[in-house]
Amino acid sequence: MAVKDVVPRARIVMTPEGFSELASRLCPGVQVRPVLDAVQFRIGDKAFATLGWPASGWAVVKLSRKDQAKAIARSDAVTVEPGRRRSTGVTLVRLQGVDEVLMAEMLRSAFGEAYTHGKSGGRPFDERLMTAGRR
Image (cartoon, rainbow, N blue to C red; front, top):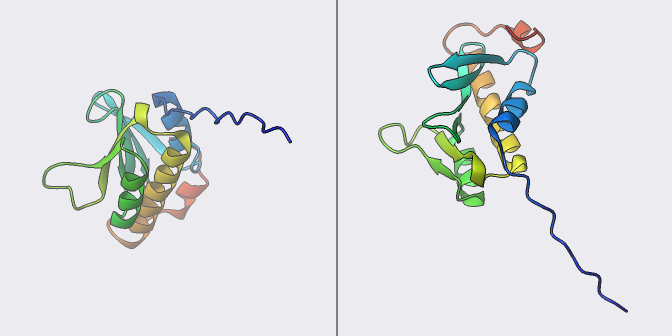
């Protein structure tokens, strides 16, 4: 019996365009807003991700501490934000080093956190954002 060569699947590396597409597709109510040289992704009044921050080729996602720990364990391209906000779930991602599957999981989690907190705190959450077109 001959053993077939096993060729590992090429890892799809995240690009800024891919990140934007993943974040925008989470629901029709995702708002995309330019902020200085970055792009922020929001649901209601809560930001869940920022592309191009702190520099080009980077992104920030707001995760629960549990989801943040899982993501950090899976990729060297994921780290906590240094400084005073390090315990809040703010997570830095070097796009070139993270694969598409992990990035999609992190964005889904960050969206869920923003959606949940938008409904329970701050300004009242408008359920119509989930089905409305982008503004």
